[in-house]
Image 1 (tube, rainbow, N blue to C red):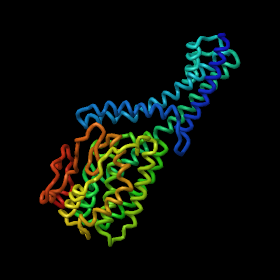
Image 2 (cartoon, helix red, strand yellow):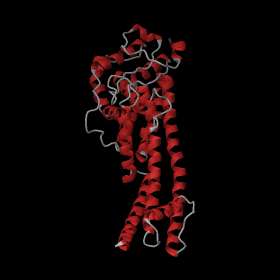
Image 3 (cartoon, rainbow, N blue to C red):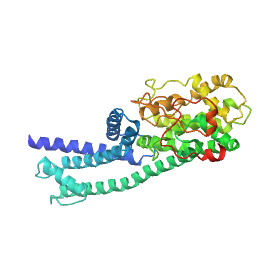
Image 4 (cartoon, rainbow, N blue to C red):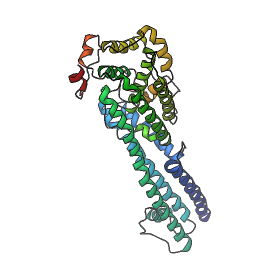
Length: 382
């Protein structure tokens, strides 16, 4: 009976080893969207735990700081689980070949996987399994050394353009504010250049976040901005410019909107809750008119009134905004105008600080922000 159980354990160990190898290949190597049961399960429950705790904080700032640990913890747990699965698999495989208890077999397997070598059985097959376990551990560590820098390289690249946009728009980003700041700077002719840069950004972010879904949950170094907020803002700015200045050449804006919509779909794909329910209110006409008032206050050269532009803007925004707002809702991103609610923080609102010229028109009740950086447009264009 004991011998039969040992051979059953051996079979389970072989299956577990093969499954873990496949999981490592899918998680760390395959350059396309691929699912691993182990990493997917850890990620799903890890995110649930962190977001479930975060929404209980009374302060959004505290929740944001807490969620900053979420993605790193999930990555560490995933890698540790894969290494633990290898140790368990080789421990089970040793049972028929060595006169060891389950605990002793796991001790020997762990010694080999972690390349410590303090326990071994001096017979041919256990020795071969120990050598194979040691080689597996070394290969896994080598792959991990390449995996982690890749993750952080993509995060740094993603946040660079977000920071550049923040200098123009304040934080959090807002579509009308982008056009307003460019108008104040007399730089509307440079808007296509900005949109082309974000077109390239969308393509790279879509590719990296589709391969490594955990990147979506890495929060940037600046708490009052978020890469999805910035993407939504730049898409809103492009859509606004299209509907308010229809006589201009908007090729770059239209390409950006298509790329942004594709990028958001790729980011949202691993989050299976996306699209299953309405997690945000639609942008209202009064909110749109507030944005147009912001542009009128800085003499943006609009060719249409807000009333005439609203139907076209609402239609264009359906390409990208619903999925963007749901992503922002579920990831509890920084509150920002035109971006819907946040899970657990339905009444939190935040607006970018405006130049002095905004004071000549009615402002939203929550306009005044806190902990703001100096506004470079106050001295130059106020």
